[in-house]
Length: 64
Image (cartoon, rainbow, N blue to C red; front, side, top):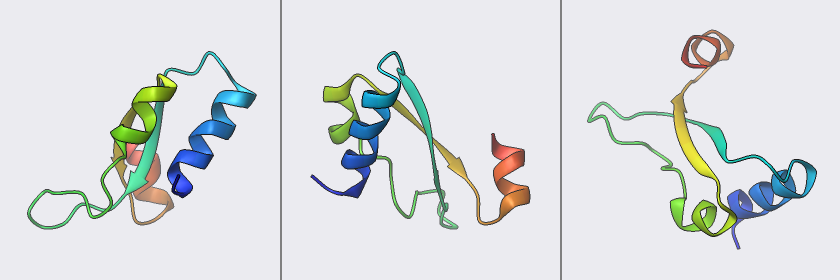
């Protein structure tokens, strides 16, 4: 399992009731995500991922 999956596994161990999580990434000019959320990793854990565009702290706060 890739790094994203391990982080989600750890999140579920710490907070088993979590069903949604935001992931940070960068959108390309085309609107596509440079590193799309891994639904194939999150679905078996019962976590819905929502992408948040952010390259710095200001953009992250705006998107959250």
